[in-house]
Length: 66
Image (tube, rainbow, N blue to C red; front, top):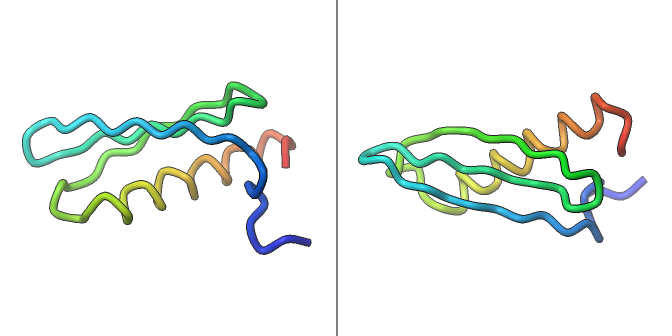
């Protein structure tokens, strides 16, 4: 099994700032599954993206897509 179950999948990430909060959406283009998280802008872009992708991975596993 691969270390990254999302490897090879196209993931679209959108980040929208709302003051001190950033809404991050991640969508798997193969299944059109989309998740959103919110976090402090001070957390940094890389951490917010990673958390959104981890949540997408969780949802895809729960739905049986990966």
